[in-house]
Image (cartoon, rainbow, N blue to C red; front, top):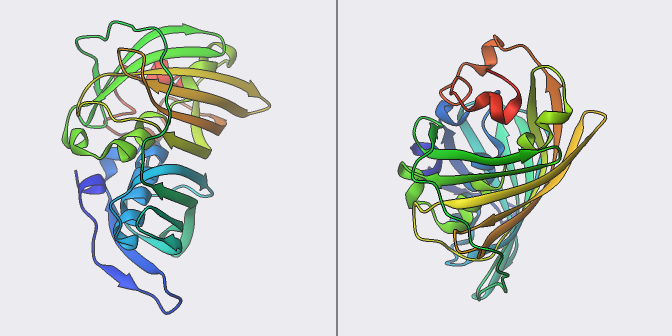
Amino acid sequence: MPVLNEIGPIEATRDGGSVVRVAFDPRWCVRSVFGGAVAAMAVRAGRAALDVDLSLSEGMFSFVAPLPAGPAAIEVRPTRAGRRFAGAEVNVVADGVITMRGTLAFAAGVMPTTRADAAPAPTSGAPTFDGEIEWCPAESRSGEFTSWVRATGAAADLPPDEWACIAVDLLGPAVVPEIEGRFAVATAFLSVTPFAAAPPGSWARQSVTGRHVDGVVAGTLDLRDAAGGLLARATQRSVVTPTASDDPRLVTAFANSSIHSQLFGMN
């Protein structure tokens, strides 16, 4: 899938930064391009522009406007470029509009991690995003949600930190019991801290805790392997928007899947 497996030419700018040309595939859209996919692409572009072989230590992303599928540019301004530590500020721009602002920190070394109780992983799940991901809900109650996710298509070849950006962007299910009617959840802010890698394409457990107040959802997510090892942790704030099930912006492989009602209160 081009959105996460290819980047275009890297163009140097006069201020010492770079512009990376990308194309966001419509198969990663819900109402617009899925925030986790945008964050993952920003990590990939930032690492390429900095020309470092380091893993993401911390990523903070602010989604300021919807990103349509198609061509876009990722502006990368280095803040540090060393052998063991590197950082950059990134903007994702489409049609002259900044749609996301982010800060990336890359580092060598292994993050300290924690371990929770092991849990049996499922054998299969519902395909989403045109078969790039399998997703399987496990437990749900007001304010809490547990599910399993794994990359099954080209996304299985993603570096662990890029995959973490996708797998942690899941806050809506925790507040489904609290909200009446049909709605969509749009990520406004996402902070991602990767800790460890798991075998490519393996199942990861998403443990979500969230709260909904006045149209805004705030929460946290731990991503763990089946043995309970912490793979990544995220904090997130999202905006809840009431909508109709026949909203034409929702005609995507993901939005029409059988799991959409469990994610966003839609069929």
